[in-house]
Image (cartoon, rainbow, N blue to C red; front, side, top):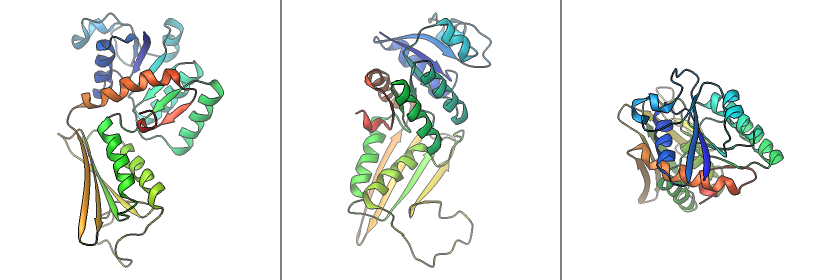
Length: 263
């Protein structure tokens, strides 16, 4: 049995991850973390009334009280970075779905994981379909170098563009290199109309209530177009990847970035 803790269990993704761990016969939920929850046990929260699991308000007390193998984190970028560093320092393998990590932060965490020989996974998207969408897009970019990315998320998402969009752009860049698109004299009558620019490709972010997580990668060429799209209609779509990550990090000795690297 893999002993798991969940940070950010009150959020929508954290709550879904908590339910997944409780329902998975290979996992044992040994604790959850939230800095402001007053209840001391999950059984005091209606949706988890069946679960006898302690709630901790600070991570120092948590690691002194329980023994954990894996740390699932769905918090916010600044908190997730500190949580991931703390988990690695205490020999707990992080599985992180929070996006917005800087390149410098990822490098520091990877170096720490190597020095501690503690595996972990940071993934912009845990939906298997989203990973396939990124891989298909990278392959298509060899033949369709002109591409734009449109990502759509709920209106409470804090970072823009999404981690998935950035990861997709990075994977496309690896295949096609830097490539300038559009008319060289193009002018925006309204600043930002053409979106963010990454190595010559445009990324557009949409934030609206009712959305969950969606991305469209649109390619254009002479006389034809190709659209690769993935839609997550429910947060449960991410849990197959989270569960897979929890199992795989037990075999790793460093941080891995991207679910595609453990599939």
